[in-house]
Image 1 (spheres, one colour):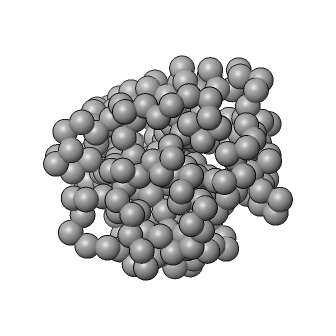
Image 2 (image 1 turned 135 degrees about the vertical axis):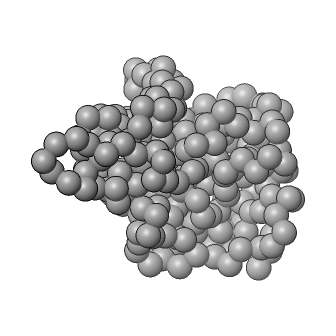
Length: 258
């Protein structure tokens, strides 16, 4: 397996996107479909592991098994929002998902949102009063943090959805992710449930948010470079992204270009 350094990453996601401005033309055989928007990745090819220089190991490519839930309510080790996935043209934004800030890179663009990678503990829940036992709500500080994360992306999501140059597939993806995130946050704030459900809902909100960030960053600073519309922006560092696994050298070259 060849390894490419993410800090020089400039990995551009999809060679077909290099010549077209719309997600709908990404591939002759793979396009984003409405029924697939929130589905985990399916069939992949992969050979290049994009790693950050601060890593102490090279992770093995994850399997394509279904994601499962852990005891803390977070999704399993093959969660696409935390583990690099195999290259798939229909999900070209996933390699742009930001990885968890470690403290080593103090210029991480989402350093103020480290809680989007953290688990909820017992101290973060408030037991509901009444005759029904065992149900609770997420405490206000956590709800406020999640609301701040939503506010961070609201304006940019609105701009992207209003851009008629973006494809309907991209608009559908962004709209569904954003509306699902809003629905999860509303439920966390107002509906008392068991503790495990609270943990799952928080983890789900985090996944939606991370994927939205990736989709926005992809259209904002990766794809324009791939399309030759603007030069690479030194301020946009791919060392903060989780990257991907791929056998496709052409795809890797496009990433490096961006």
